Length: 474
Ligand code: MN
Image 1 (cartoon, rainbow, N blue to C red):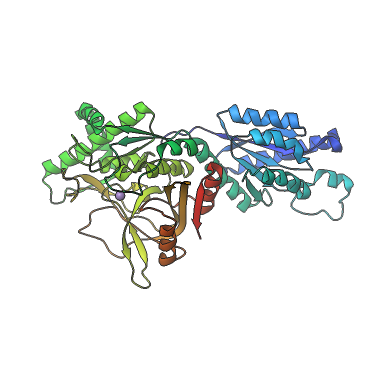
Image 2 (tube, protein in one colour):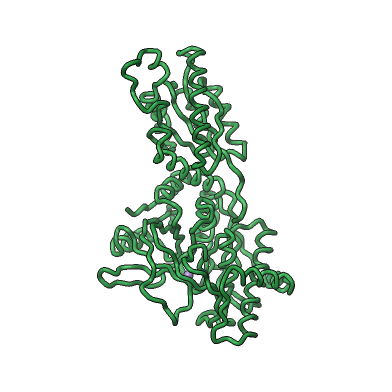
């Protein structure tokens, strides 16, 4: 997986001077203990750092400024242990430029009826302190995340973990650079979009490069470099020569590895973490990058076919949130409309990410009836079973819209001996008819990201953070 910064999240507790120094010491100790124990569970993907008890507007404002300029900090988690007058939070919170989670919890998970007194009450006022604090966030229109419940409960910790991944995705979104080899496919509408708006709203830099520049890079790859990758390929996957002569098979596979190395070099040099190709624009290349694109997706790069830079960037973003676990570029390929079998068969001509493979992928070489180039090598495999989500992003004159539904992924009933591509079958959980209809009503395209790792709630949270429209189909 392409490296992502080792982020941390800063945790603060809210209180006030009214209770006295001794009480504030207790607040600090309790907060530190929560942070220590949450870190010790190892359920959170990123470290929490306790930064103290906040009691004044000046202190809070300085804290938020520190969060903003520290690149290691991906977001803030607040907890109102006691009653923290929320006017103190206005200035600082308005300045905050990173995701905010309000953990509405209580240090103890019970009411100690036998011993409870006013000293206890001075220290355990989350019940109303959280509401005072939440009011100001609602008033400021922050759309921050609220996680409610006992901090040591599994469900609460799971929500914190998912939100951390989403918040890191948000931070990383502003670093995504997409390299487009060629333009979008001629006449296609849904893969188009406003690249300037994408940079303003989503942080994505989208650059065009002529395919000739890539060809130059392809020609510079050495035999030794290809030999080394060929050996790795043979270890990881099954090489299946099929009806091809040995010479033709090896040449086709080696050419894809040449493209893989060249594209990777090109992307690394330019700081790109996602890319697109277009089968209509392959001047000087022998084959459409198939296996090459699949290996790059495996490595964590975002990819969009037919020049689809929106899906390429979305792919990189969701791979970061999912730690590159089973989160892949897909296309709605063909349908099963029979009663009781309703499903979408997802695939692409060549470029399906092998991180969802349920079997050992086979490297095969077959003709491609499109593009007029040499027979490309590609990985062929069957996808996985389980709960997943499917996500796309479309561009409208009123902004970007993320569209998502939950799906049940299954395996195809049979093999497809005459369609040598990687495949994944799924059915929207709301049903194929409702799901597909609402997807199309929302204007969602056929290129998507399918994830067995991410949850629908994360897509909704991400849209809140980015301030874009969301159609969460449920
Ligand atoms: Mn396509």
